[in-house]
Amino acid sequence: MGQPKKQSSPRKTGLRRSHLRLALARRVNGKSPVKATTTRKETGKKVAK
Image (cartoon, rainbow, N blue to C red):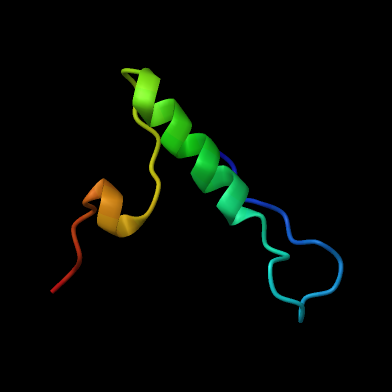
């Protein structure tokens, strides 16, 4: 999935639309056998030590 676009003014809260992408990814993960990545904690991505 592509990364979300920013809306015009960068300094206001809630402008980055990643929360929409997250909601979609979680909905997809509920049904689809192909899993979309959500957050690093949820997906279980390895952290470099």
